[in-house]
Image (cartoon, rainbow over all chains, first blue to last red; front, side, top):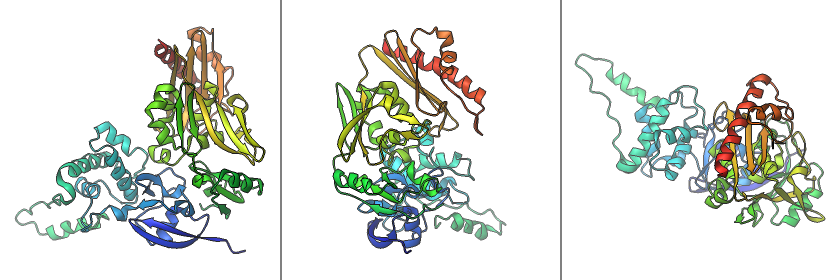
Length: 194
Length: 271
């Protein structure tokens, strides 16, 4: 028995994508498999970990708890839509880079979308509010301290630096230090595109 | 972790939605889906059809008047929680909603959906029961109102019939001179509570509702019980269980502690 398919137009990061999917296709799977937008990560698939969080009409939601057919007509923003128009990092991405807000990067897309919406609602969070903002997302690497710092730094960048905050400068190499180039290259492996 | 196949329809009117439900005994209603979709993904439920009510007009309302708060079937937790009018007229709704899952879940999940899901570990069924609220449902024979004390009939089981759709819930207003309080202990704020308690104090009447310590949302009348016996008196009506998160003894202890706290706090609020 072949499964009935439904024609849906998903509007993701400002672009309409017509797809044909079975009703049970989760939005997270539609984004990754049908649209090839693999920035949205799938962790627990039952709404606990927050890795798959995307913005639906500006509000963070778990894409693993939505069906693609239900998302017709909604404006969806994924992590791919968080960079600035000129391709530079958005304020939250920039802050994660500066504050070492990620290690393996698996949970990062969900944090970035959640914090982007959180700062829109509350542009100047207190330390406690910054912690609360990320309370629904799990990270297994960082111990959260640097993610909380990233929230506070992102708020600062959004307030002061605008979209073109200065990228971090690598430390000046000391005389005789030969492996500098190699170490500077590590920034390219953060998953944020350096 | 993928749902089993199901048919899908997104009706444009309540009449069509009821007809779709009535036409398929294996059909389920999809509102926010924040409880339903995990059940589908884990294959704990496999309905033959989902009737998506998110396209129905006029169900995302939050109406507040002197009688209380009426929440439409598509009002999201986040919107009810954010309403200053709701907080003013029935603060217990706001207090409890701040403990319902995490903000991201509250952006999609609906308060009425949570009531119909009938989970004894959830906050809102207890709140509706404690306040003596009601649920309005629409079926093939028209509308009926189900009082909260007739709504919860078993674990995860409500008296809403298969071919009925819950359209709104009514939480009565807080009476002048009455006080309410809500507290829960969870491993992480927003996670399922190990134990939760809500109190309603009105003159000599003291009632406390509990979550996670009985099979159904349970309200215990503690009027006339001395302050040092409140928790023990409540435990006569509860069945704290053990799981990987807490022993039964620990849950019983939390009942004693939380009961004292919410009753004290509700009394303070009543003054």
